[in-house]
Image (tube, rainbow, N blue to C red; front, side, top):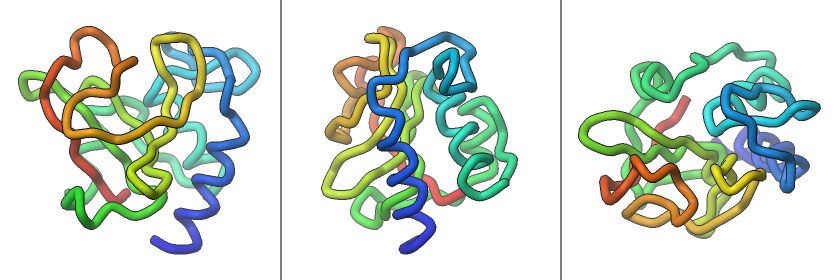
Length: 130
């Protein structure tokens, strides 16, 4: 993942504080969690990935938590559904669009992030290479 992961995370950090907007895919109007990831992959690599988290997970390769590298997707779910996605930024941290209203960098945990949607209660965290 190396260099491309660094590029993706570096660009993602530029958007810290960007407003949250349900369905959003633009830094001008705001992002939701998957819209943020979707936008970044296109902006950084010119790569179109699926827009919705449940489609992202189907196209990505599973990664053990201990093998996460910068740029990997970190996905959270509940009852078999992916409900939240962010980008692993290293050292147990990930960057994501939160329901609290902004792009945020926080700690990736084995349960849902504290500011994930209420439907994301304890379900676990999984990583994916795209």
